[in-house]
Length: 72
Image 1 (cartoon, rainbow, N blue to C red):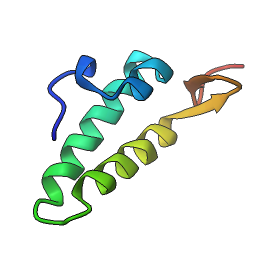
Image 2: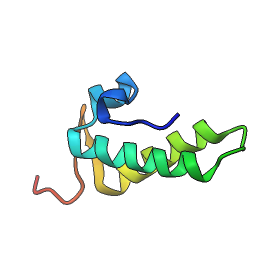
Image 3: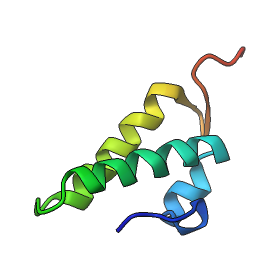
């Protein structure tokens, strides 16, 4: 099921990711979900794709997700 806004994302995504990372997750999920219509693993693939997209721009430091190229 595609997500219309970040408020519709799973709670584990909303509670862990900053707003921009949530945008990335939602957009990647929705695109992958639409691309895999008819596949029985459609939702699983979309979630994996979304996390991979987030990890291209963010890294987890301790309990916090921070931009990959942020100055630490």
